[in-house]
Length: 97
Image (cartoon, rainbow, N blue to C red; front, side, top):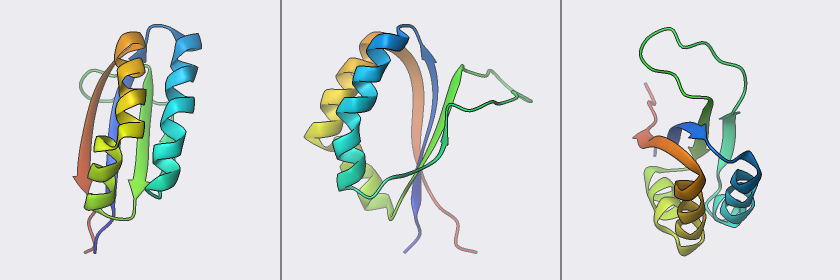
């Protein structure tokens, strides 16, 4: 079964309040086996529009990634994020070739 990934591009408007999002999302990430591969480090936009923060989170499966996103824990965090940041996020299945 292939792994799956959340890929998010985020512009944070309120860094202090964004910390509340991170803290609120943590239980969902722990529950569904999330592992952060990239979390807001340095980047270079080589094509298209870049955002200030880029995140890649690995999950054990597509189902785990979707279940995490739809979980009550993450939905509570998402409500905070939407107040303090602008984001684009996708869930993509990993390649096992």
